[in-house]
Image 1 (cartoon, rainbow, N blue to C red):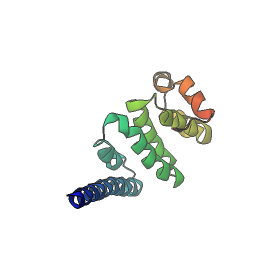
Image 2 (image 1 turned 45 degrees about the horizontal axis):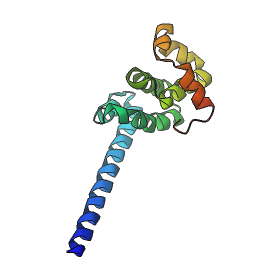
Image 3 (image 1 turned 45 degrees about the vertical axis):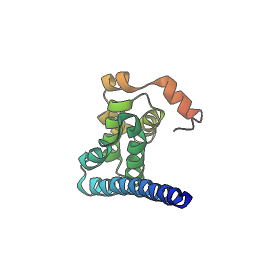
Length: 135
């Protein structure tokens, strides 16, 4: 009986790991396709499959490699979408400040004054600058 429980638990762990890897791999493929086509819909299609509360983490996972590949305008479009969905999250504020600091021209072009008034949260951004663990 104990053997069956151990085997069942092992199988369950394997299934969970496979599912997580599959989703991660799917996002990585979507990021590659987004860079190739300059179309963020590939990433959004994958992220939309996650609950809203989990989306900021997946946005971050998509934005970082796009940003690091110097596709800054493309990354900015994803950052804008993240801000529209969950602007109060630390990672959203981190990316907004990153764009403003590193690519001010792109930030001015992409984020209107009205958009910033609605989506910029100074207190959350300040926590990120102070070393917030989730940024």
